[in-house]
Image (cartoon, rainbow over all chains, first blue to last red; front, side):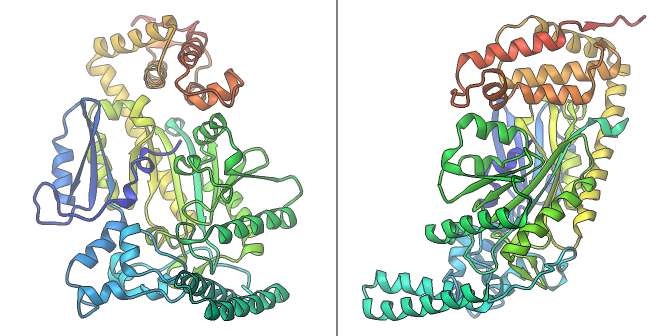
Length: 190
Length: 342
């Protein structure tokens, strides 16, 4: 019932140049079955069309888009226009969950909802720049009470973990008390 | 007629808590607490008994495989065994729910022989129930927020299963797949391409509303099914001996074999279905829907749960191959090849 792409973990592909011409980004992931083995290749649109047009008669031959994980990665490996240097772009961090751009690149996944603000320029660039279509469709119909407090709790929990790891127990105790206060507030409002 | 080769369809919707880190970055305690919240919401907001929520450490291998084969669980999630990951079943399988997989929530509906746009209202209503109690991460620009940025927006993935053996063997699908990518549609093999089954699905959740996404996948699936019918007709006209030979041999093996792998069984069922469709094989009541039902019944999870009744049976158990061959002998026992004059 589910396509085999999910088995191949295509979401973790790192971006690369077209395997055929080497000039354009390999945005299409081609999979052939040759002698019972899966053979993978990353091709650009025009090389993919050429390869597909001349496909051998009996080869099973598939194409799926290379995932965004690689696109985010490729932004980092080129001189990033949004930042002064690659090093500074890697240092940008989400204040809520502590994910860095490097973490996002390695995992192919964002750390938390607030990462969308922290890395908005990178996400926008990866999804097609300012021309990228916005969201169309369903919207939440209900309010979300105590959102800010809950966000603060998550931020503090992350801080608490780091303080405990650094054995800074006195500061950690203060943070823990603050978490308890906020949690109580959230519970009351709910 | 053309829609008959669209065997099944499903919609999946990804949602996340508005604040918590996404599951891969969250602490166990946060995920455990989230799973408990989902349980409370399902108990209080849905009708009693509608939802059955189970932690992933308590599902048997046979049941996991069965759920994947029925489109109720994703293959990646079926390998999860952490107690803070949960699986929910709605009214015995109308819909299902994965909690703390790639995203906090993945809500799914899947149905044999129904158009996708018809499934949207079910999914929409169940999403409303969950949202009323959980509050999902949402942004004006990016829509519903997901762990992978390319899923953000509607968070919706629409997919349908289409039977395309003739397009596959004639090498047509590669160029079709490349063209479809440009239109935001992915064509990929299911079950390793055995039996000529392919999945048509959308990619990306931005710029198009849910119902439009479902309609688009429906439309592409129907077009592919029409092309498949045309190709079968052409194959029979241009290569009658080869087609009759291939289909006839497949039926012979299906009627006489006593042990069979899944891949072989899928290929044989596919050949017999095509044969019936082309008027080369006579088998009363064997519709495309019965072919799909049989393709499911020969899968390991279905054999473990329905034929053997042993949820813990190992999938390399040799009895699976025997049971599979028996299912085909029974299904095709009365089939016969037709002479050109008949």
